[in-house]
Image (tube, rainbow, N blue to C red; front, side):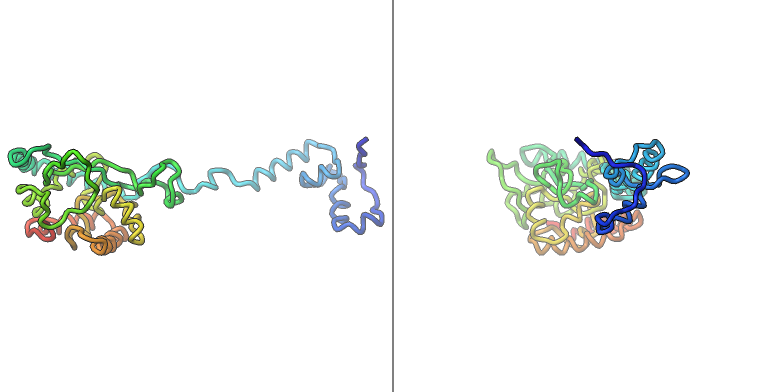
Length: 295
């Protein structure tokens, strides 16, 4: 039979005095004119104190105050969010919409020339790695996707500048100078970088900005992420048609070229603003007209 413990105070014997918490047990089990003194739940259970309503209310207050809420623990939002100011996005969208209106006759002319000079579609679509919308606390891994591609994949539009490949699927590789796959009209478009004009529709769709790091193909992205330190940090902003790296360097031909471009991209990310985007847009015009870096 279980043996109860008296609720009234008693004088400690020799055994109690040798226990390490005898003073604590002696003072905790004490009646006051206002009722029980404040005791924790473990001490109350050990001494068999009566479950008084006043004591239960006091314990509930202490537990609620001492335990942080779920909202305090998760300071970083779990929702997908963009990491750019609304003014930058508004500027890029407005410029893309205005540019589409201005270059619409040129787009139609290029489409006709592509159709007349080679067989195949006018537009070339390709999957690229876009903005990484994950919260910063989960940037190192993704539990929702089996393959961490570093960002949200999207379909990028370009004018087709190469001959249509044969039935077999080719590996994802960089284009090279004097590439045999490039058509005659495609060579002109690549020199003037006019093949990038359909990406203005990607800007309106929200996949890209006019200014930002160039998006890469998934397979090449995975390779470069392992070769270049900090490469995935480029995905913390929306990719762009042009950028600080594009106006300072031409097309990529090696990992060293990409490494230099990453340094330009990270420099842009540190000082990104609407004014910086406008400055890069203006510097892109002479790059196109003077055919710098294009082939």
